[in-house]
Length: 228
Image 1 (cartoon, rainbow, N blue to C red):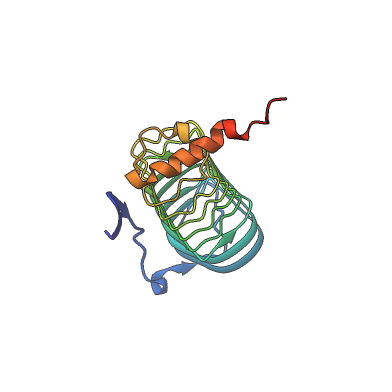
Image 2 (image 1 turned 135 degrees about the horizontal axis):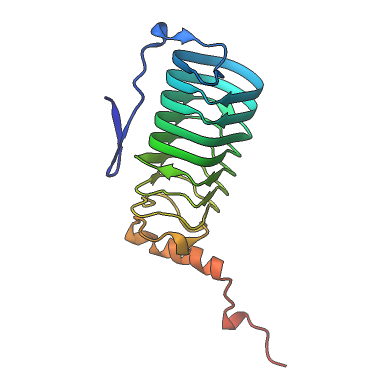
């Protein structure tokens, strides 16, 4: 089984046959059924809705969709590459051995989804919202942009953010023990006080201090108006 290593974390990658052995899928929405050994490529869609469907051992490439909805979807050993999936509502799903590579997922909204051996690599996740995300196994964001993304009531235990842009990312209360932020700039993140137990470099102490000072909205004596 192929793996990728990020610091102390190993992520198992999808096991997918060569494209010549995969069937071309025209529709991924099959409620109550599975779509397996498939390739889904070069699609331009206004709406993509997938409900209560198992997607197994497949590749999704160059999919552009204006509105996306996944509900009760199980993803196992699937690769997404060069996709632009906007306004994506993703609810109540389980995801295992899945890779998102070079994808634009801006405005993604994730709620009550479990991730196990999942890799986001070189993806745009600006304004993404993650609520009650559960990392039941390795979860890695590598070289991703998450400007103004939010994490709320998430379990990000041992999750890795490797060389990510975390400008104005907001971390609400959640579980962050062992979450590795050691290679990302933390000077603009919000919710620093919630990041108990994360892994950082000593050189990032000043970044965390800068972020905390911004949150506290302190007034320095030298900035006070002169007494009358």
